[in-house]
Amino acid sequence: MAGGLTQTHDDFEIFRLAPESVGGLIAAVNHAIADEPRLKSRIAIVRRGERLTDKLSIEGARGWFRPMLGDLLRQGVSIVVNDIPISDQTARDLGRAAGVPADWVTQQNLYITPGESQGFDPHCDPHVVIVAHLYGRKEWTIFEKALENPVYDAETSTIAGKGDALPVRRKVTVAAGDCFVIPRGVYHSALALTPASVHLAIGAAGLRPVDYLWALAETAIQDPGLRADLSPEAALRKARDYVRGFPFKAAQLPRFPRAEIPAGAGPQRLTFEDVLDAVPGD
Image (tube, rainbow, N blue to C red):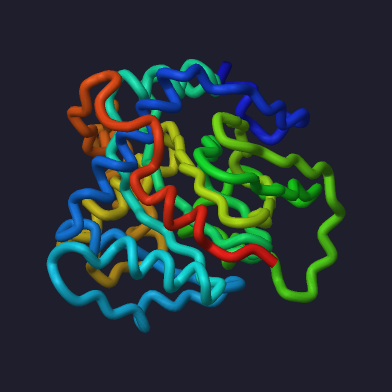
């Protein structure tokens, strides 16, 4: 199944999540939103590609999220809540549905976007993205442009330039309960339809060979002998000897925290859905 998540994956098939998977995701979102003191450090806001998080001021420990959400949406601002913990069972169900290997690391970010708005410019991600839609409708544009196995550290930018002409490969419109996969490196953008849109973007990644080389370099730089000034030949010999003797070991992928949310717990609606319903449409 992992081969289907590369840039050769071309159909962007929309599939329906099982009701228990949708319920698990909604319960996880409600669980995260209820923890308002911790929520403050997870929120980012953006409008038409402009990041505005440094302008956001949150006062009080509790009771601020719902009024802030309504106010920002009415101003055309998108809200991102990073690092939504989900249960192990929901993660397994979602991974199986999307064809993501069980040992890949995942991170879940929540995107809340007002109607007729596009939070981010066309861009690609250095990981597979599983889009799980939870509220409203959203039109996704998939472009022909793709980078081969991008990573943030190696590419100058994963965001398309303002003047870039990006041929469209496909447009897909999703509703609550829909899910689809965006392969790593494929450029995309999304437009929320009225009154608002909510989805979870699950970033999934395996371990890359370059991760071992980065680990080697980070270890090597701590060795004073490898920082010495030598002739080109001597430096090359010392570097080769170090690499040959480096104790490479299979690494474990880090796991993001999971939430202990019993199956079927909580309402089958987002706790802030009434705020979304009240956002005026065009």
